[in-house]
Image 1: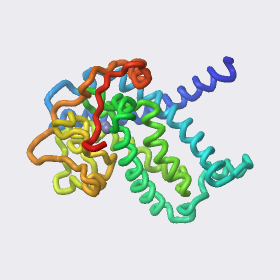
Image 2 (image 1 turned 120 degrees about the vertical axis):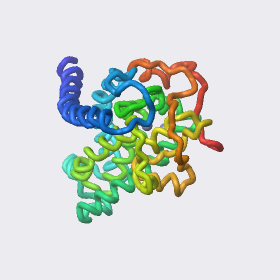
Image 3 (image 1 turned 180 degrees about the horizontal axis):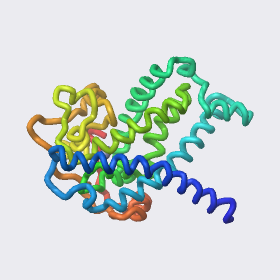
Length: 288
Ligand SMILES: [Zn+2]
Ligand SMILES: [Zn+2]
């Protein structure tokens, strides 16, 4: 029992802590500097005194473990059931990259395909998670009333698997090698922190090109106040294309959270979607 289950889990957690700590330290310094140097979107406490910070940190260390396992499991399943591979050596080569229509292309083309492809997939999975049947899993991400860069880590594992992990696996199965994911990882982590940060940045005329803090903070507001729009993780042009772009000029979003009670601790949020009688609150798009 100890050898088979507990030690590997501890090893994975240790690995996750080792890889998350340098990122956490870098982003902590960057967002502390921005707190002093840049204008906030909303007045309030600095990020290091925000309620729920410890819960955010727990999510930061646990989710990379869950996501890492899920990515490999889904990829191996894809190799076996979509490409019909059965030999361990074949599957290992597949997981390492090299199959699919994008496999032979130059690295930069694969990187562009990965960025656009995953954003398109995550735009739609995000919209589905705002539908009534999946909202209880995604409500965990929207539970933060004090939104700041650390809030970006909050996702229920089910939400992570059928959102970012699924998008990664689709692109890996199309032939994008894992080295592309590794190379773009720091950009994606920084973007996730940035779009949740308490900054009044809109990118001005480039507001449709790249997701900004104001763009995504609108997404975290109540649907009645313009929330439940702006689903794209990185490229708001997807929201423009599909009619969900919302960034009124001269107004800033200022109230976040969900319209139904949510447990605020990590374990409570893990259990929330499976509770017998979760609050019936939903956050669907009109017509969803
Ligand atoms: Zn959402
Ligand atoms: Zn968010």
